[in-house]
Image 1 (cartoon, each protein chain N blue to C red):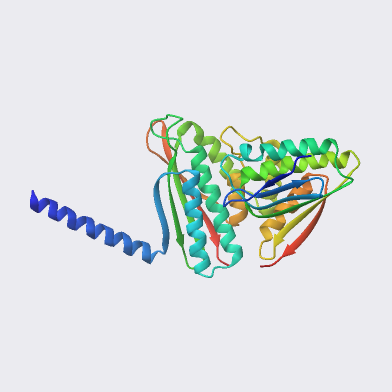
Image 2 (tube, rainbow over the protein chains, first blue to last red):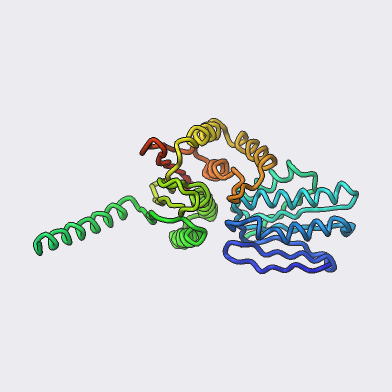
Amino acid sequence: MEVINIKGTDDTPNVILDKSSGQFELSGRSLPEDVSSFYEVVLNWIDEYAADPLDRTEFNIKLEYFNTASSKVILDILLKFEEIVENGKEVVVKWFYHEDEEDMLEAGEEYSDIVDIAFDYVVYSD
Amino acid sequence: MGINMESEKQSFLEFAYQLYKTMKTNEISLVYEGEVTQDITKTFTALTERNLTKSAESNTVQKKVFNVMVECLQNISKHADSLGGDEDEERRGIIMVSKGDDSYNIITGNIIKNQKVPELKSSLELINSLDKEGLSSLFKQQIRESTLSDKGGAGLGLIDIAKKSGSKLIYQFKEISEEASFFILTSIIKRN
């Protein structure tokens, strides 16, 4: 499968989607105005991946900020990973949050209430 | 005429000085009226972020202020109406950020068509009636049910502002004509 490696900017995140090395990452800042156009390629990639996923997928989410429009798209991404779980493969979301950022932990907990995927919370400091 | 121009210049200088003093006294770090675009949003949030870092404000508060500013500004850039009522016209509004003794206040304002007021008002009332847990449930319900509108919004902005700020939303609608009102929203972020 094609590798997606998008470098982040001050309003868009880093995205790494690499099946062969087993690296799946969304990090940095996500507050683009036009969320759909940024994430379209990401969602399409995951659709294709979900058809033939690895036995275990570890998805690292380490976001510093995201706007509410992005939060909707992140749910769409997680729902696609949930399909993989429903098809009998393992998916773990590693949700990183800064030690000062209760809000980011809560955001992760809200997602884990909605989707049926295992969440692993990882705290970090500066 | 020369004298008139001279006194006009004087009074403008006086006005500028009074404005400067008012801003200093109230610790207003940002005031803007004009078009609100993604570039403006990025510039203002970056500026505020830099000021907050310099003022050694806690990480938690910095991120909350940043988050709330982004949502407030993106609300304007997506939803503000104009007096002309032309959909394609630029989206304008005001933003003001001030620092009080125990909180940061983010005030935004924009024109809204009167026909949209009742719906917005009832959303605001619902949000203000909820506690932290209630807001979280509402957010989870909305994020599942919502679809991204053609404007790229998911209708989650105000809930998020209330969640992140931890304070009730303060708002007012000032009717300016039969068609439109001015909507003012104040978000308060406690400093400790």
